[in-house]
Length: 479
Image (tube, rainbow, N blue to C red; front, side):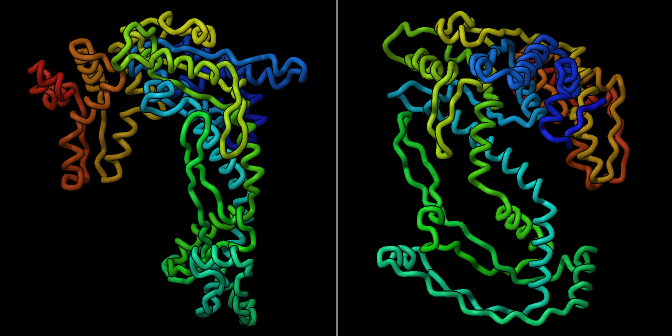
């Protein structure tokens, strides 16, 4: 039985036993059972920790995971699907983007700021979903008001940013808005309009609505890690002296319903509460996936060149991974219980090339297997988001039915494995290139040949790739 995604978060977590987590991951990722078991246990231990008394809960730290395997075998997808499964804040970063102080690049603290921003988006979407019905009702009432009234005089207040700042310096209040006379309500006509609106019969009518505009000032703030741009809401800074700007827009009823729904939902949620919950969610449930960990493995052996900052980046990562406090625009964030999942191919280096302190912070290590021809066949057929389902749906929008025969799928998998052996092994990503090449003619001519049925057989695949596969150098270049 599939895990229900429409239940509340607490109930969702109760349902997530390690076997069920692995079963959910199996829907999207083929093989790599050891890695799936490792992340499932790590996630379940988080839930177990929440049941502990306070005196021991803070002592239980997450067991970070280091995934070792070639590109295109599912390392990133495992972490991403895991985060989606539990609605946890998730960010993916590349270790090679960071440098030690004194070199060009981002500071490591920025990954925590990115995580908090992701958490804010997650929490805000949940809050908006919770008030969606109420926001929908309020938006409909505003649309009905706009349909019933004629043009309204413009509201008065500050006409420009300069006027607002001058008023602040002079301690002058904004000019009051002109009093507007509301037309007497016509209940029978309003109900008729409501019925037509809900039926979608007024979607193309143009109305005038008033929308809010929040003014933001972006100031460069110097922090320990460097310059960070932090948005500062002038409405919060100046309060009533700088009211929210409004402007009139003429839009269709369909667009007005979408715009006003977002605006009403925003007004119904407490942004301070969202920020507070987001910080807590990031601290307790956040997942950071650090890719290309092998690119920073190694010790400095020279005094110059591009590798000089490798160990510096590792030492910059160390306090973040082992637990520290990072300042963000939403407040301080502790990283003690953030789950870190690192990954790398480690072809030219080994995990033991990392500094010992950082090695100790990734106690769980799993090796992912390279993918072969049989794995490619399963990847093309089994996942819910398989390439075959994607291309079938895409071309189906133009009345072109694509049918992949069993031997056709096997031939695509065989050629993908062959090219991976002869050229660089990029794992399942090779299938994207092969599929695009096989279906290039159909995709190009779909609008002209529709409606049509196209059968992708082994012979069809060979015909489409004959010239490329025959020339090894060309295959390396194109596939």
